[in-house]
Amino acid sequence: MKKILIVLGSDSDLNVMRAATEVLARFGVLYELRIASAHRTPALAHELSSTAREKGFGAIIAAAGKAAHLAGVLASCTTLPVIGVPINASTLDGLDALLSTVQMPKGIPVATVAIDGADNAALLAVEMLAIHDDELAEKLSEYKKEMENAVIAKDLAAREGKL
Image (spheres, rainbow, N blue to C red):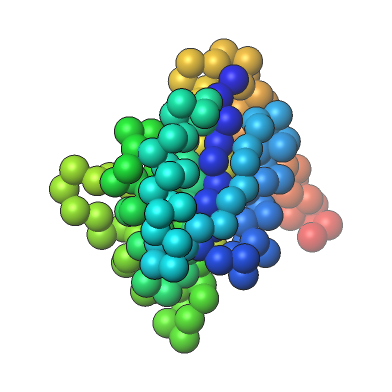
């Protein structure tokens, strides 16, 4: 099975991105977590993304706040899918990071999830890997069934006045 490369623009992003590592662990997907700044360590960012495919990664998750150029920089150096997680790290409540992550130029796509949406980034990465992995696809089906059952149970509790 392919692995997921998670790149944080700063160690301060780790609190948000723990949710991604928990989701990947739940599905048994191996990952490597690295810290590389698009602005302070551009050579490291380039090296990580340009060698990711040959190192067995199937997708990259990039988390950054403020100017948030990390996902775009990584996407420019690889043919792997890159998922950007804009981090709420400024007085603009993450809107600056969201716009920086989602507004990529033609030819450099970055899939972008919600501000601080680490768990959805990991689920999207798992779905990408599951395209060619039936066992992983089955785990995703089971996960979605668990979510459905949880909502049905809450609905029943609400109708019975137990909420």
